[in-house]
Length: 616
Ligand code: PEP
Ligand code: MG
Image 1: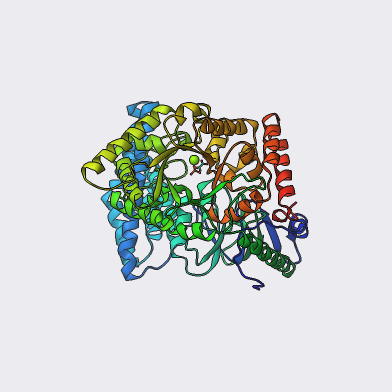
Image 2: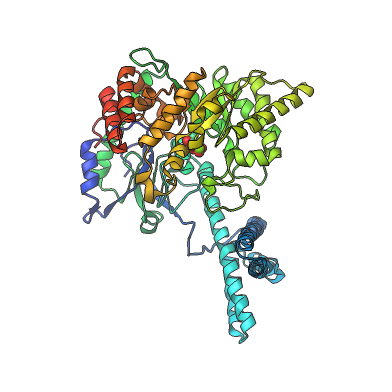
């Protein structure tokens, strides 16, 4: 029963009654209603039919395929073989480093399986003969082949069966992983996705017209999957543990992105309560719209710049709609994901130019490629790493892969002729990286001058401060740039040694930890001493509970998902800097992150009670 519209904008107002209802009536036998609690990562409420996806699925789907789609199935098979080869070679390389070449040679047998013409011809033959999907054809072949080999009484062949099982399960997993991607891309009916996991690149291909929201078993607030959801204004909940096993495709679900819950088979009473919540939020939205065109100035006159974080060129509309003063962080990685080859200079130039021209004269800070961590390209031969967030990512990758960096920097420089463009490097950990990157920018500027291609000669360059070493040495870095933007998502994970993706240790991921606040303060002070601004573009920047604290610590720019901006502005326009500074000085002398959080929340609530009305 659809009582109300499915999509609403993100304003957090939660009725105490509703909250109690969710807490205490989590399993209503009489209605069949069941509530799954997780972590809210993207505000909004939606309801509809569940569409359940499993990456690590044991069930292999079997379906008929039309004549025209058969070559595509064969292509998927070949793609899975290529990916599998890459993965095995990686493992082989690691084993050869850790053990010795002899031990690594066992993987030669695995690689041979991938080249086996019987495998390739038979699976291709089955796809065409039976007109079925590649997973079904592959499974049928593997079952027959291993059964035949196992029946022969020969030790050597038995070993080959073990190799075969190992390799084929890898291929199948790759096929199923890709299938999830395809399934998301091909959805036609409105639905709420319930999955064990969804990657950031998968969220990027979601069709916003049919996917009403998504919920996953694992995940965290600062994963790029969550960030992407906020950017797309797609209600989302993560960390639901086993919801994707319990909820079946087709079931009626209600997803509450404010409180982080999914209600299976919502009762009429629940739908009624949520209907009321939706109406209430609509009225708060009205208030926020009224200040849309007004600046973010505190009651005592401190001007704060509010900018938008964007991932794709299409996000420009939201930047304007929510009244951002420019783009504080353009995550360019998404131009590189979900494709078979890298975007060249021309294509990137077109994308950056479009955003710069659309927002001119507002600034657009283009962050250079931050691949790695939880953002991978399947076609780039980036080694699989044990600790990808500590590995070969971002500026480290770009400084080695100079062709990739050159194409991007030239594209950004060229786009600077068409608007107010700035460059920002991610993951800077020392001044040498800055010197190297700045040296390359100079080199490409010279190239463009020689080619008589225009660019902004005064283009500003900034650094993301998201590694503790950078925050501690901010004074040294400050000599080499024109602004700092604190990437608090990473800064918190690296300062506290808490994996930002791991929901098991999410309670340790503490933005108000005194260590984090001291790093923020030190960075803002270093920027001040060098006469430039320091902003925050991590998720802390869009959290109104954190706004007074960040302002009190000396931050003067906040960049966030566009839809979060009106709430932060609403709060700033009611805030006194004296209160913010008092909170910051308390925080800098307090030992407990929890106490600091409570004080910050209390000040935010006192400042703008209607933003937090009735929250537990
Ligand atoms: C950050 O780390 O805070 C940040 C803004 O960058 P990303 O989330 O893309 O790593
Ligand atoms: Mg980061």
